[in-house]
Every structure is written in C-alpha cells, then in structure tokens.
Amino acid sequence: MRILNLFFALIFASFAALQYNDPDPWRWALMYGFVAAIFGFAAFNKTNRYFLWAGIAVCVVWMSFLLPEFLNWVKMGSPNIAEHMKAETPYVEFTREFLGLLICLLALTWLLWRVRKK
Image 1: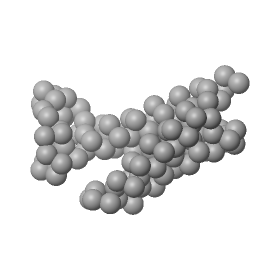
Image 2 (image 1 turned 60 degrees about the vertical axis):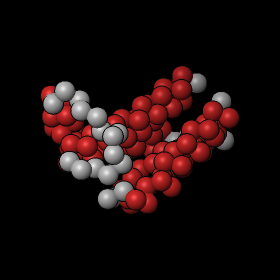
Image 3 (image 1 turned 120 degrees about the vertical axis):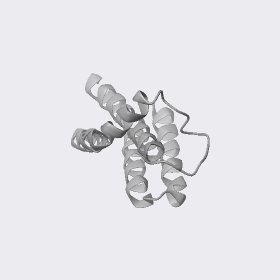
C-alpha cells in the first residue's frame, strides 16, 4: 500500500503544482496539497483520522456552495467543459471546481475506509 499512497501523493502534488494559472490558485493548491500530504503521511502509516474527517468536511461544505451551478450544468445537458482551457462561462469554472472537489472527496473517503478497515 505504501507505493499506492506515494503514487496518490505525487498525483495530488502535481495537481497542486498545476494551479498556477487558475483564477484562484491558492485555494486549490492548498486543497490538493492537503490531500497530497495526507497520502504522503499514509504511505508511512502516519494517518490521522481527524485530518481525514476535516478534509472530507471541507470538501462537502465547499461542494455544497458549488452544487447549484453543477446542477445547472447538468440541466443544460452537460455541455463540454473541456473544449477550451479558459473558462469562458461561469458554469465551466464551477463545474470543474465541483468535479475537482469530488475527486478529493473520493480519495479521502477511500483512504478513511482503508484506515478504518485496519
């Protein structure tokens, strides 16, 4: 499991590093960096459930603010959000953010499930 945790730590660290051109880079660098750190610590059996729960809570609360725009995107028939890298309409940016948080949420939940299983 150490290799898998290190792999996810590197993936999320890469996500954090790629936020330099985002309209709000610090929030995303912190979120992805947090998840990377959690997986980095998990690789060395230093998982703290409180940090996992805190990360999950942040994801859920943050996603709740983005949910109306995400649902609006779904109602519009889920138009392409990857056609251009620049977010030309608000729903593109909000939908991408919602899906990014969903990835973080799924990763943290999976890690919590693995930790609780031990």
